[in-house]
Image (cartoon, rainbow, N blue to C red):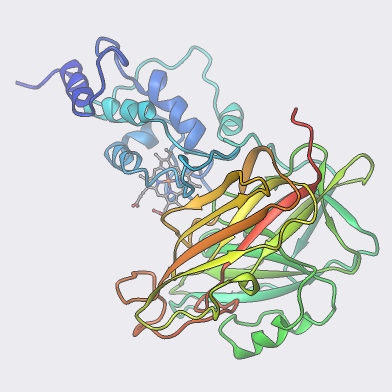
Length: 430
Ligand code: HEC
């Protein structure tokens, strides 16, 4: 005899320690009533055709064929990808399922994956897409500047990862005031992640097309950049829109340096990626500044991780010369990184948690946006600690046998950066 769906639902709920009253077993859990809203909000932005997810999850049929897998990846919190510890701090662009949502999906699968009734007027595509932007960032609007790589890059079919630099002169004679930035990968299958930097020295031209593995790439790393971290792109983080009234400035005569990581490909392919800026005027806008903490500030130098060692580095800022309101934060390490934590201590001894990534994943580096600008008083010190694992038991270790690793932009080198966008002063809380 087959167990009834209702029995299975209540059984699944009991397993998960949920009282039946929270999600009444009498109520049928259906795709349309219960599951679709969760997937629309948390998944379809990536799981749609042309986006990074390996299959679409837009409607019942698409979801049905992956149902068991969906229950699994949500229960283990593998999906949606969100690496920051939510017990440490919440962020505006957070994409995390509640226990209840996870239980609903499990109950739906256990209960026979029923479709239920679609609402009379099915709202698809447009409204679905909008709901799929969990951080409420609409697409980039009118005043745009779109630039592309100077020439398409030929990705060799060598089945190796490629880390390349590209040089994109903007030739802007005026300062640009940027409200939103969007990265458009040319080859969505192979562009794995990208970092955008700004240079006004005019000395980085020759970096165009250079491999990050090429020792000559160090020749271009001798002068500080005008903005070492304008934007970091990872799949699903296609655009950033700064809070209302805030802009990022790009100085006259800027060249963008684009650092792209390509996944291995067995066949030769090409990529021509683009960057789109939404621009505005300076009137009434507050400028977002970048506060970057780099390896220079490490207190237990040298920043070298011996072969087969695990090591934690600590860095601290100078006392902040003014009040600052933090808008975003982004830790950055490479493949040996294991965890990253940052916090600040005010002169009066108050501790503010800034960000904690307990299980660092090079593939999911994000710009974390604070729920509202986070004020740090003048004189505060920002502390960070980062753990690295250079042993062979680190499955991401790019060097086998492992070898001593130090600072560099190449992915086989390491970094310890903390990039903060802030506005000077204390913003009035809305
Ligand atoms: C930020 C983009 C993004 C979001 C949001 C996202 N996914 Fe994914 N998902 C991916 C990518 C990329 C992969 C393939 C790479 C991987 O498995 O890490 C993937 C893989 C999967 C897989 C296959 C896992 C495997 O091991 O092959 C499932 C199932 C899945 N996602 C379900 C979901 C569900 C359900 C949600 C929402 C609750 C969701 N995803 C949200 C990007 C996303």
